[in-house]
Amino acid sequence: MKKLIALVSTMAMAVSLAGCSSSGNDQSAASASAGVSGTFEGTAQGKGGDVTVTLTLTDSKITDVSIEGKDETPGIGDTAMETMAQEIKDSGSIGVDTVSGATVTSDAVLEAAAAALTSAGLNPDDYKTAVSAATAAGDVTEEADVVVVGAGGAGMVAAITAADAGKSVIILESQAMGGGNSVRSTGGMNAAKTVYQDDNDFDEAAGVEKTLKTAAEKYADNETISALAKTVQEQWDAYQADPQGYFDSTELFELDTMIGGKGINDPELVKTLCENSADAIDWLDTIGASLHNVAQFGGASVKRIHRPVNDEGKTVAVGAYLVPILTQNVEDRGITVHYNTTANKILMSDGKAAGVQAEQKDGSTLTVNAKAVVLATGGFGANNAMVAEQNPALDGYITTNAPGAQGQGIVMATAEDVGAATVDMDQIQLHPTVHVADDGSANLITEGLRGDGAILVNKEGSRFTDEVGTRDKVSADENAQTDGQAWLIVDQSMYDASTVIQGYVTKGWTVQGDTVADLAAAMGVDADTLTKTIDDWNTCVANESDPDFGRTSFNHQLEGTMYAILVQPGVHHTMGGLKIDSSAEVEKADSSVIPGLFAAGEVTGGVHGANRLGGNAVADFVVFGRIAGQSAADYAK
Ligand SMILES: Cc1cc2nc3c(=O)[nH]c(=O)nc-3n(C[C@H](O)[C@H](O)[C@H](O)COP(=O)(O)OP(=O)(O)OC[C@H]3O[C@@H](n4cnc5c(N)ncnc54)[C@H](O)[C@@H]3O)c2cc1C
Image 1 (cartoon, rainbow, N blue to C red):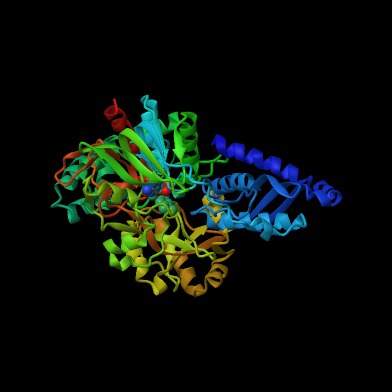
Image 2: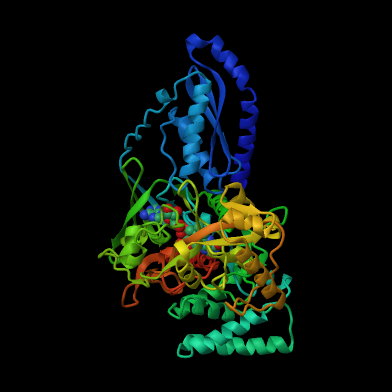
């Protein structure tokens, strides 16, 4: 967080410097023969709004750079601006690389920098000389107790935990910035039996009953699910006899996760996830991250997703909130992070993991010899060839994933000399609400909106599914609609309460209408059909019953100005990955562990089975990131 605040204050300085730009222009004219000097500003359209670059020129050389873009995506666009400002300053060139994962912001930076040069009377093309790759410094070898591969959520949590256990830690990150898929996560983190759940009135009896019914009707032959359902039934009966606080239990969380995963999850990993979830929320508090706002999410029987709020009490995206805090904690502990450094081999010695080999941006090799290796490289959702190899029907699908989600950790660990096993590799999740923006980017529209009361309608203006059902079910229902697309509708009260929705509107992803007829016109659907759909839904809310689709969470009636976003399914999560045990040790096919090799987060398989519930991946990277960090530290003794 501190880093962001520092960035903002640097930006504030940049604005005040920009205020001096006219005097800079005067100076430049006066000293034309010596070259142009002064501060010059250029602006271009970024992802969320204007991106302004202020260049300080001394004798026509770029000597300082500041970039402002307050509406760029937190944790992604702002990090890219910071990285590019440094690179332009260091190289004196605007021929620097764009930052993958933040292409729109990066392009805006380069366009604005060119405009700043033009305003100085200079030719931007003269400043586009490609930044020559630094002369390869030669191969380097470093030593650490623990090397962590990947600076996403799992990697940073593992690194912080191992460092707090007294170990020296090095992180390798393939991209120019950390965060991976973690920084993109919007909804929140699931946890059961937290004190924050008790701040809520319990109004989810129908959700619990529905889950118990599903367990009995669909999973009677699944031993784990039946045993969990029996325990939950007893807990539920006891609660109804004497309702105290908010009803939830780690077993109900396990039951939801197992049912969500269609019963194929590894029950031990699910138990570990759920039993450690409340403690993980408390641990986040200790490092400065507060997830205290609790809501309901798809596939959860009760309110269980924990979310951050801003100073005004509005919910904010969990990843953009958590990643800067994790990054700050990594920095505070003096942990070295090598960015632009792609690990490509796990070093083995006597059958034990003994370090990692990686390629740096300049092509040189970095070898980190370590007592323990933690793989936290995320999934393979951004590698469509690997996705299609597992599920040919997904060939060419759009994805919500960050560019680093290439599956490289899985490839490294399954190399013959390492010998890791994988599980559930063909279990790939589609997310039903992905919006393709005008710039062609695929953007996740958070599931939380459906939990908070949004509905989905097809291009004919009718509802077609239980919006808070599991992602695979909602995606399949959506694929069956015209063009495989749907409109997600939220109302004014939801807009007022959520900076996330406000961001969607600012980015131009929504259409809106002050009346349902206006909204229908903006969406291009039949006004009478949409009016009937909204009226029918509001009746469902009033009766707390949805006879057509069986939705059990109603929240509020949709009223006032309404906003609609066009969505379609996209590849979102790869549930399969490396086989681990509940200590995050990587296993071979015969379930023996590979000494010194640990893994956490989306690079692993088994936790989510055939379908991950919203909020369970953040829980996964915090819970198993901590376990992997601690196990690696214990091993490295
Ligand atoms: C748009 C979006 C929204 C989401 N919302 C939610 C949500 O609300 N709640 C929830 O629970 N889950 C959510 N998820 C899922 C969740 O964010 C991810 O599953 C989780 O963050 C994965 O964390 P991770 O640390 O395992 O991987 P990542 O965060 O992806 O980090 C992996 C890191 O490893 C790096 N890396 C990869 N290969 C290498 C290599 N060879 N060498 C060095 N570094 C490498 C990557 O660049 C990346 O930085 C969402 C996912 C997306 C895409």
